[in-house]
Image 1 (cartoon, rainbow, N blue to C red):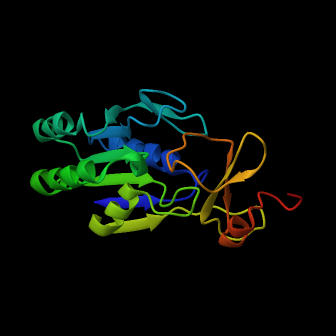
Image 2: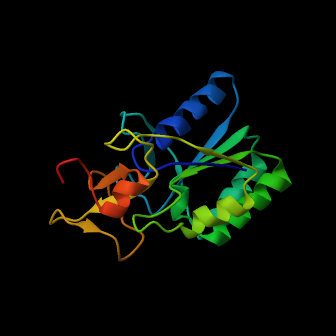
Amino acid sequence: MYFIYAVMNAGKSTELLQIDHNYLRNNMQTLLLKSSVDTRHSDTEIVSRLGLRKKAMLLDDDSVDAIIAHIEKNNYACVLVDESHFLTKKTIWKLSDACDDYDVPIMFFGLKTDYMGHLFEASKTLLELADNFRELKTVCWCGKKATMNLLQGPDGQIVKSGNPIHIGDSEYHSVCRKHWKAGKIRADH
């Protein structure tokens, strides 16, 4: 099991689709999954900000057993999961069983923390269970490594409390810890 994590806008979905392309180019079958919670750009596709998109099966507590049965019947070289931070602990544990029972690598792509600076339950579980971890990096507006996600509300104010599940895109800003603490999305903010 692999957990590839990053802040918003770091290229997680792009990386996933590139890995899928590499497997397919070598005549190896992959299975693409995405959390059913993520309906931001498409209900049925993994979509990259670069415009890449590919059909995926939806994954949640209700579909995980059927997906595992599907994995068992097929000879996948790799399973790729987008928006993994929205999964439940139960689903991740079941997928870890599939990884072990059917000897198929599973790569999870997602956020490590929410906009309040807390680990997602799924990310915590992946940090506990995964064999390998890799951080994709991007930069804050100041040039330092971005490690946090700031959420800007419709009124322009920074939001640091509420429901940790907030589907969005342009209202998120990837920043360094210093500017997350200060709630600064740019130098003049």
